[in-house]
Length: 293
Length: 293
Image (cartoon, rainbow over all chains, first blue to last red; front, side, top):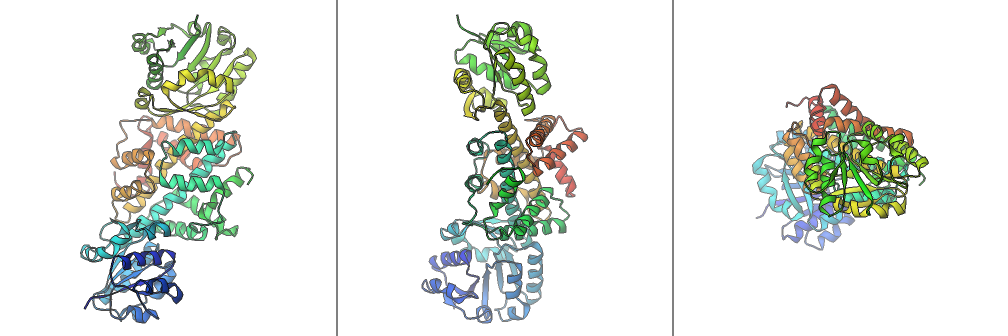
């Protein structure tokens, strides 16, 4: 009989990722607090679990993709995890802090369970196409064991034996994107205040030295000034920058750009912009530079 | 009789740019303080001028490519410029401050002369191949007039009617590169302090969202830790970041990233690293994060 494999957390990302696994012909049980989100996956053959206990019971492999650190630690408490099969492997795919990954590892270890961290880069559209970038870290043998499930989701990158290393890499990547939004915003406002169209400056930069997908995406959003159809919420950006700063503090890594960008996101929250796209921090820079909306 | 056209400033960049003009079959007089540098161009047909006065005398079109603001203003004083042909057009290609461009404009205007700013992106190797990116700004008719000379040097981007707009664009671009060095340095030190190889993190980022020429170039330099075969001197980076900050201050454009990166370069100078590559600021970040060389 094949092992019980569970996917917990069926938001836009989790649903798309679980769907890829099902489409690859693998068996999968799924659980989500809001059960309605599981129905499309049931149609693809997923077994829908009614509560976390039913989901975990007898599972040998659990994937989690939830909104934040608190949700992850709430679902996976130690008592619940005792119901899993011996030798459970947990693949934690949410973007959470390195401290949360360490705490999870401490919950699993005394139960003889293994934690892998595998946060991902990519938006829901990329997840649907199996085009995510997955940051995997943890014990070698466990990584080999889960590859059949991860490969349908995208490209897997190995970040070594310590699970929290993958979380640090994911956070460092989000820091790079947030910093890119800030630096483009500053550069655009400087040229605009000298009578140059930011669009023409952007064409030069994105057509030469800075010809990168992230530059095209975020430069385009900033220049369009369109932040109300969010691809990634400002509130989540704020959460992530604070997680980066926490990771930096705990590892004694001064990150002056990160401190500055975290403050931008605190301002974004203070402005009540948590539900706008995270590139809305560029509007703060425009205001600071005396530029009209 | 054809108009006298002069190229002043034959460093590594200027020599390569003048050479492209000569190879395009155009007549060119050249001047450099160190006359030896003019000899290779003489072999290509350039008329070598012995002093600035001889160079300017009767010239209808002058290109300048010198090391800094001071050198530019020293060469082009008002008395000397009276010796030019009526209606002189000056194409100022050095990376100088917007204030210097404005000052130059004020020197040319009463003499009935026209200033175009045309600073460039690209290293000497790109200049030799005619692969620079040129940021051109100034009056429309004058821009049309100089295109035959600029096209052999690379791709020309139009930044509007105000000459100093092109200088602002060039400075904004250098600010973006310097900020990129800083943000890569911070991200690398964060992952390294969590047991992740910065190289593997870099492969992910430069192979996906941040797949841009500048990222490959500077990420590679930082990871190699090789700063003693400079492509662009730390001292020039320091000069440019101060020019960006000056432009930001004068145009009432707060640029918090820029303030921070300027301080990195002040530290680089204090360390005596002005003759290293400007990406050596990444070593300051490594030191701050407790990482060994």
